[in-house]
Length: 412
Image (cartoon, helix red, strand yellow):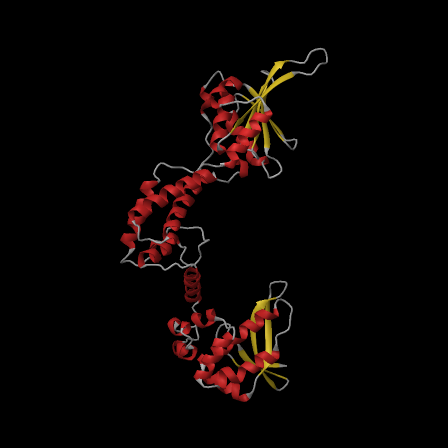
């Protein structure tokens, strides 16, 4: 039977009595099923007396034991001897000895910071003095901020007041991987006007720029080139206007601008290309991929050929499915898009098959500059067939010549 002898709020270890023996019990880590693990080890009456009366020592013990729990992993046993050895050293030793101990062992800083420890004294190794400001209630955000600043310090980054408030505005002060957002309420009111001037500079720099969708990578994927172009534009403008800002602050602003532009693209219905206004465009087309997928398009439907084709690509494109074809059977011509190589082939029928003979085709290749280039070529073909592609060359019928051109481009 287990009786609780002493407990504090939250996750702070508690003292229980099992079979007449005092034990300290704490939850730490997780098992293979991601459920919290519980560890216990014996303590004495003298240890219980200190735990009852001295919150700082109680928290210091917790901080020292947690690395032993981490070492146990998902199914290992706690090193009970090492845990018991910490009791006298942490709870009963003079402050100078405790400080010396914490310079030799691993310990969990985040717990102490979350419970109000003086960070400057902790960094100086004066752990006992640092815990004079300890509180029973935990402030996890304080610990998160501490670790975020430590990670930045390890990279040699020192934030100024404006840098800090810009990161708070975008919500990336604690976690750089967080999708940025606009949070003016999180900013120091005294610095908010300056933050907004930085944001305005970024907005002016990328006004009119867009980040298009890239159906080669799925329905909601955005064009990486557009993203990089907008990010570079914003970075340059912000750095020119505010050279004192650190890279972290500049990047979070460009990340915000790009994320918002990408969200606008994802939430805007895909616009049909303008070939619908051309009465001389294609009337019927067949779309195919490298995995047997096929889709027919006929003029007069709700979508233009280009819009239908790119929807087909977004639905079907994958790492092992990167070759797509548009064919006009009536005219005997088509184009084949090679997404894996940023290239395209246009195919025209030179002589149709007769009396059981195979048709004769002319195949010409050209390099393509990203998804924007592909969109132009598809739209041109839909409007005017292979002839309309001539201006988008050069086109090479010699495969070896084309491969040399592709290698030269890739080498750049």
